Image 1: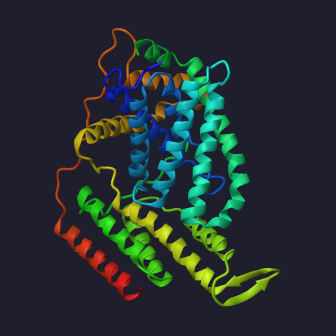
Image 2: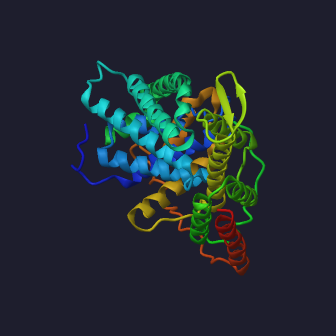
Image 3: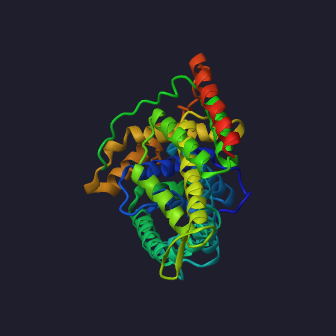
Length: 177
Length: 211
């Protein structure tokens, strides 16, 4: 397990994963959404996959590149969308990183970690929706939102697990780091 | 893979330097946030829509209609001012409607101004700026090569693409990271400054007069 501050930040590798996050965010943006505001969260895949070999500082830099970069690429940096995105991503990252470090992998899979991250992200988004944008009455959509979050969290976790199991590139990268 | 989008022209980017454009956007956003009533916010949101379209960004009208409508509906749950009509125990009030409309217009306007003022060529100073330049260079390479992704052999094609851009095999050539994007070298044109003045001026007037 990489320790925070034990070595310098590998900026080129973090930048590459940041680019992957932006790439997935753009792909998702190009697909039509079945439900307004619905996001699959493809851009979280690099965050999930890199939990095993990035230090806390490197993960934080990746997180910053992801939220600021998505804001620039999609043009939403100066809007409330950025507030939602940064709050939700930070919450999900803290939960995922904490679980990854504290809970042994035999008790919790990557899918479980992803699910917990998605629910943390949804909780923050509901709180922001109730306090900043829509008002307290918007709490009525919370069950729907958590239902969708459970599905997307599971789907992303499953995708990350499949990629981790089958990617030769990731295996070699793991061996090098 | 999604269908390729028709190429949109960023008409604002031809005349505004990304940094000028960013601060211009912040000015417009300040006018929107500090303006008082729903009338001022609606006018500014329309200005934002025009600018977002001029910047060549994709604007989904359905999304913005849903955003504004949902903010209005949720606001109606908190009665305020004169009662318009009653639906069972629920009173639909004038104050709640216009408060919601003002809020909905503000959030839609924020996104419009953001779309108009945030350029992909925006660069940051310092170490973060350098890492961001590297990230964006790689992102552009990924976007250029996205046609190599095959839905029927997704994992294999993703692996090949990643290996090509960030080699991990022993003996492979160096990583393609030397393409750090330095951003545009041009300055804001006279037409650009005219655009800044002719949009910021009326925005300030709208925000102050219709307060």
